[in-house]
Length: 241
Image 1 (spheres, rainbow, N blue to C red):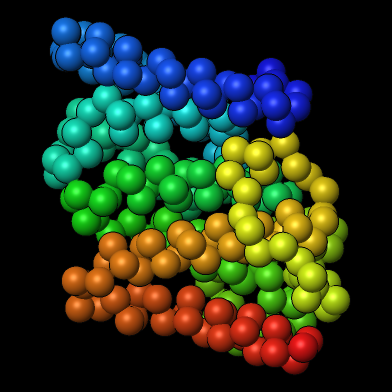
Image 2: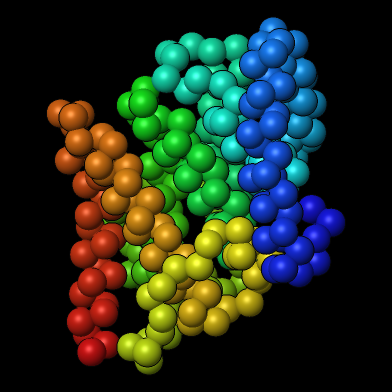
């Protein structure tokens, strides 16, 4: 978290990617010790998180969730490291407040990690699904967030402008090519490209979760409010055109 530029952040993630294979090799040499070491770090991070649970932890915590995915099996229904991480991430998404685009990026980073965790186990993670809905709702003007669709949003949005994430009316030239999520961890400003990038990533996460839960009989009910919000966004886009 000491990085101060996008370039340094990219280098940090490249370093992490380079280390993962070596850490995996080491963990296979002594699985019990690897499990004990990682779970102790997770416990320490959770103790820090409990001091202020409405704030999403920094990347020095979130990156361990990514590491766990590479080191331990996520297909098991119960695992001494993976299961606590799932509960930890669920707690973060359930308790967090959103103040700016950095918080959104951190939340979506967790949602992305969750999608990796459940790709084999096909778990239903309501906190991740609800977080996606909450982010989509932020792109709808506040004065029309009055229906039942918006009555139970999963987090508080703490900002002087409730329309902070609403794209400007003149957004037809906005880029729809999403950046890599890590690039958004250093962005607090409100440019059309940055906001549209967050929206595109959120829609991709929605699409991924919708596909993961396709075998659930209640899939339509789970995503009913997502559908309504997306239809509102589509209607807004058509009206602008």
